[in-house]
Length: 426
Ligand SMILES: Nc1ccn([C@@H]2O[C@H](COP(=O)(O)OP(=O)(O)OP(=O)(O)O)[C@@H](O)[C@H]2O)c(=O)n1
Image 1 (spheres, rainbow, N blue to C red):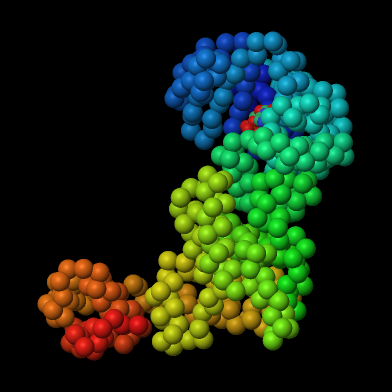
Image 2 (cartoon, protein in one colour):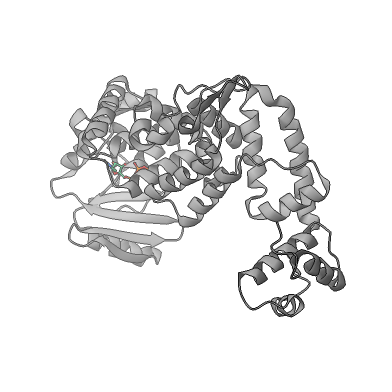
């Protein structure tokens, strides 16, 4: 029996067939059928899934059943026309109810040699996303670009740059985050550069190509960013999307901030972390990344130059102030230092600091203030306002670093720091 619920007179098509033929588990299943609504209702009835129209006018229907999504589309001009309109030969395969695989004869060669080949040049131009999809699919499906296709993609990248006729940013963001989530993400972004597409979609990163740094660095800014991403995926194969974006973007503002310092005899990049955080925010918003991913990646880029102090009270303060960004911040710093040949010793130190921070964080949950806002106002004779918040924050930090341990100590700490004659605490 077929492992798939085949509709009568229909075909399984697209990426699912490609994945099956490459020995991979398909994600979702796409079918083309004469009557999509009827086929979808029939399947939903059999599987107990829910059904809804994706696009009623174009007669696209979807069934969501546990674990899988089934999409149904019509084939008004027949299977052959449907397949020839698609992007790549391996995405233009169909399987019928009897298990017979249909498609362009050359697809067999492509399958054997694991090549991604555009069906024809015009098909690449038809949807501006297809050149980016090509890079993403070579990575996720483990394929190489067929040489003609590679040339067409490069040409297409130049066309996109000149015409500015780009696909919707949501679609671009989705493809780029698929590349970024892959274990070999750095290879994916290198391929993006080779294809000429880095300049199209991430010109801020392309600006780092050929930008040399100082002695300890052995790579230019762009190649260093790739190296850090590669190191991160090795150190933390489970690194989440925001951390991966931060690794890729951490030095994004280096090209604009580079200055030659005659005293130091090397380039400096003052303020690149703060400017880089702003650029990262713009880039990730442009790519329509989820707001929590943007916020976290931006925070990590902004803080990535702030390495933890050796230990003791200062380390506790660091943990208190950076808690939201930890331990990811240290993982980013570790990947950054590992990516620079000249910083071997710093890597060892950071590893020790990471352990110290992790055990400190475990042993010291975020404290609750020993005095509440009302008590603080009464104690300091304050009216409600920002000063109360400042005092409470300072008290929390003093508790976190172990300077204040009781309510009496809290009161005298606040009087010392915020009493009438003290003004604002630095
Ligand atoms: N710009 C596009 C997008 C999709 N397709 C066709 O629609 C199918 C389904 O597309 P989609 O599910 O977006 O991607 P997949 O190629 O299936 O890739 P993956 O499963 O890895 O997401 C593709 O296989 C391809 O035949 C296409 O020709 N051109």
